[in-house]
Length: 325
Image (cartoon, rainbow, N blue to C red):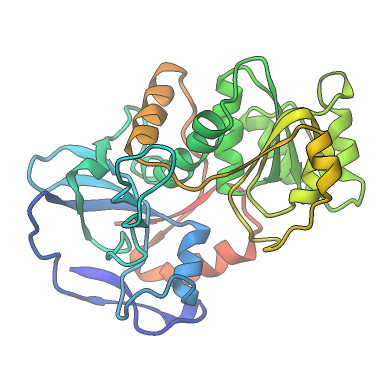
């Protein structure tokens, strides 16, 4: 089969396409003939060696295609070996494409529990774009923050895949959604996805500007921070509010003042990708609340994976980059 292979860690140029052996059969695992594989920032970190994948390696977490044993159209949940507790993953947990060969290939093999039917009305590109960001946002907003209809939400980092999906899920729940983004164009696209308004987070007073857009200017019930700006995000949170954090691509450290935090009665909730229960909850929500499919910015053939990574890292597009077959 054809696959994108890492022989060394580094920039996009280390991604090469060649013939490799198909996955070896394993009890309880299923082969999927992939039609599309969506890119995530996580894939960039794998390529850079942050997850210490064993080389040579096939990256890629997201995919959609056809089960080779039944012919069913399916999505792949990239969360493997979650474990028995819903509160947090177990010690064997990993993301597909970290250690297990991933979806930048014509075939991928995954445990059967990691498959779900392709949502009706989704193209292959849209379906492949849903699992990682979808289950991550569902877990962050529903499982961890317990966001409820009628509440307010600030999403930091408009334009990214997680932020866009969070806006779509929250809007489908009749939540008052505001975004903080790096450009007016990204804020406008977030409004198209369901956000009511937005602020530019390149201004130093963006938390105060965002807070002014919350109901009665009192601050937000929930703030989703997938970029690492914890201390600034807290400035827009109402007393007793919940700050949900799950990324660090802008900052990897945060310094918080202890007294204002506990006097504010704030909750700080760490989260990551969800497990099978979160996946089922996401797909039920997509069906029941008619959540729009993830926006797709651009598609590339498998052979152009390196160029897709270059454009992903440039950060100038709104929506997902997808490798198609």
